[in-house]
Image 1 (tube, rainbow, N blue to C red):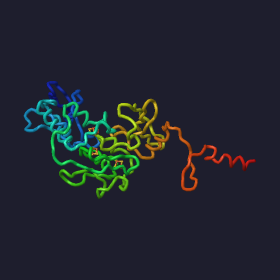
Image 2: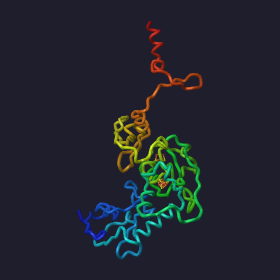
Image 3: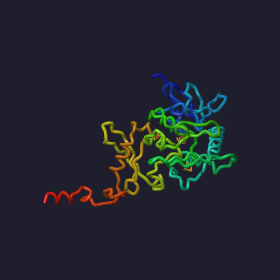
Image 4: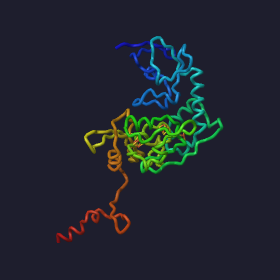
Length: 305
Ligand code: SF4
Ligand code: SF4
Ligand code: SF4
């Protein structure tokens, strides 16, 4: 296999020919932030937060799309790079609710992490702000497009991996937003609630409804579980808080196989630690009953007698 040798932050790095700069740098242990980069739909280069300085290049280079070349001299945290990243974050936060105190994604949010790392505080830039309606129409997924940073990972995942293309980038310029067909809500779309878009969203724009308000991200332990509902054997993350199961979530496509709703909901039922009582419809209402009543045991015993 042919290789190339380059210098990253003063360190000699040798990688196979064709390796992206991002992978060359992170593989050598250097940190590069990313929002839109996704292994399953690479080379998007939309958010530019991954820019690096390449000696001799006219502009900063998006490392997720650029190839590592022989003799390159790269800086991943130069003054120009840090300034560019700060500006990108300031622009994102200028149109963001910044309600990390109550956001379900806090603690597991790249925007929050990078703002901390690059010391970017509350919005400093003025101007028009987005004011979209919160979409909780889907029984499993909440969408808050005011928190969306337009990385398009959800769109690409739904199109390229899930092959459903339920959502896309609608409108243009300032009005660009992620939306189902005709800018409707998720409930009236063709969405199958697989949750893949949620698993790749780097911020709190897409979250699981079942976990909303239940826990902070750092309070849960993740355990990998394999679905047994069919022979595909997809893997999910079971979330436990204080030892108690609180939810089952889809893994990012790069970490697992295609997932289906049956598997996720079936596992949620299987790992439900809440005591469950059977229900029977009496008149117009479902009411809780004993297992004996639900199974008709009294009736069977009477008939046997
Ligand atoms: S999406 Fe991230 S930055 Fe925005 S409010 Fe939620 S935690 Fe904070
Ligand atoms: S839940 Fe699945 S089908 Fe629905 S929008 Fe997200 S990726 Fe597409
Ligand atoms: S909803 Fe999330 S994944 Fe989709 S474009 Fe917005 S920030 Fe990116």
